[in-house]
Length: 330
Image (cartoon, rainbow, N blue to C red; front, top):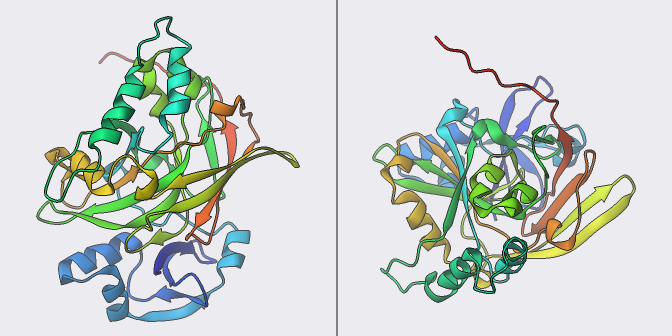
């Protein structure tokens, strides 16, 4: 399967790279970014693969060396990060309600189903509608803009006021809005939808606060359809020890919603169909180290890998210094 990457050269400039997952990776000529490549493809009425064939390939790139040297960048960036919308959906995977339900029941004395469990069951019953039908809408959240995104090898910085910085291993899709407002799905990538689960546990209405954090994307933009079954591994390392390791599942066979249904309920809002904007949409997970009682610490390393992706997503957790916020009156 075709993968598109952005790799920095020795001078720090971005190069677009095409790779089939085996054999040599090669620079895509005539473009300076994946965003430019995608805009050209839309304008020409071509797929990304067809556009790459049209512009041609150049020198080979040693991806292992690039990874070792910290030159693997985000798979796509926007010239203005404020026009890169970062959002996602939760409770979309079979089993994803367990950890959330336990978390919220701990804050309640009643035995009635939590809102999380009710939302999950709605997805199980109505998240995979028939052709031409609209399914139930999922939980939705906003994480910020492109300034929040981090590449593999970069640090994930938790705010000084955060109560937790926990990984969420999952898949995400990248979209570019065409000139007429049509969303184009460019492909899928590995993701860490880093969140503050302690804040969320304190009160479900703080979910919005808990999601306003950085997030990481793997280096490969996997072009084409996502396999129905994706199985990966999430690890947390502390020094020379692995303190958490567990598989995670994704793909529609393991989800309570179809990807098309999640896409519809995101892009039904005209706000999210502004020409030229990029979107990354996180599809959710059922695997969290927080649910297993792990309390992450500064210096911990998050490692996420999954076939068919060839390259892992690796990030180190740090905590930002306290920075007082002052509001001035004009």
